[in-house]
Length: 171
Length: 171
DNA sequence: ATCTAATCGTTTAACGTTAAACGATATAGG
DNA sequence: CCTATATCGTTTAACGTTAAACGATTAGAT
Image (cartoon, rainbow over all chains, first blue to last red; front, side):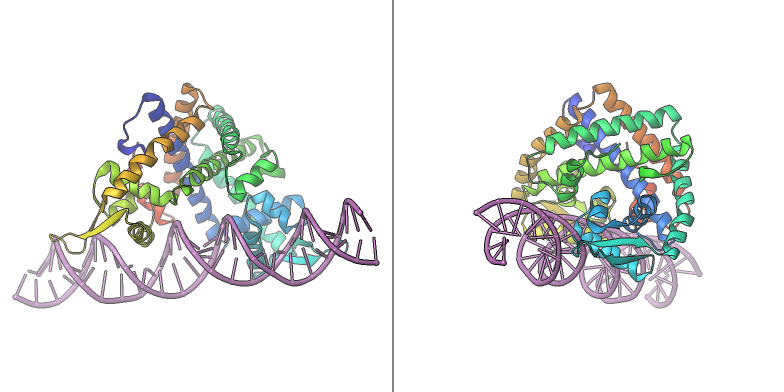
């Protein structure tokens, strides 16, 4: 956005940092989406499978919180995954409002197969930065993210942000 | 995503950097969307207005390239902006395939009014980082973005990435 | 000059996303 | 017990996004 904006040095510095974070994230997301598209998975679908793989069976609202997405969205993501037989819904007898989502054997095999190249791709991309640079980038992004949430508190703000705020945004 | 992934130190470092960039960008985007929603604008609508404001009248494909969005999408963005009378389409006599998009006086007033608080918001968020940190963040993100595009070349990849690759991704 | 290529904007179908309203179920207070 | 409130998952409507097919128009090649 800074293209031709006239502002103080402080403003231009902030704008430049802002757009470079945005673009880097967009580029990363496109790269991941392209990689997952080969397996017929969207990023959210992958995220759901990965969460189930590492955390065990989860309810939909837990997945929603994990992925920072709305409940309605997760209904769709899970429905599509179920169509492909990667997961199954299972009513919880103890609390019949809940659906416990668990991987099918095929789903488990899929995510186990997909995960290593996925991690390799991320690691490969990150190799453009030195170890020290990666850690520096992580620290700066965390600091920025935390600060941004403070700024937002109180305003009418999307569910994703609220969800992130509710739990400590992890790591 | 790293939640509970077992991997080498190198992999975990890369994954942590990756998710922190993603989350920071998501948080920033939500903050901007919330701010613009008050004016009834989406991020893309704002981006189009801003481009027209700083660069003068543009054709739709130029706006698409600027915002890294597909042509069909820009058709919709411009259509919605035109409904609200912020911009106007104008056929170019010299090349009748082209539509030159220009701000209406009201549109110019709007973006002129919106821009300062928008910049102030970004500057305010970025104040969570020192000047030196902002510059460091910018540098790291640029380096990462450039590297990622190299990795992508050759694969079937979204238009946005291709567009970014085609022109030098500016700055 | 004519025919072929490429470019521009539009339309369509499909998907992901959100917010809001809803029905089913559970929990807490009287 | 019974009612009010809260939670969970679903549905719907609306929007942004992409890719692909399309018609109109231009530019290039022969």
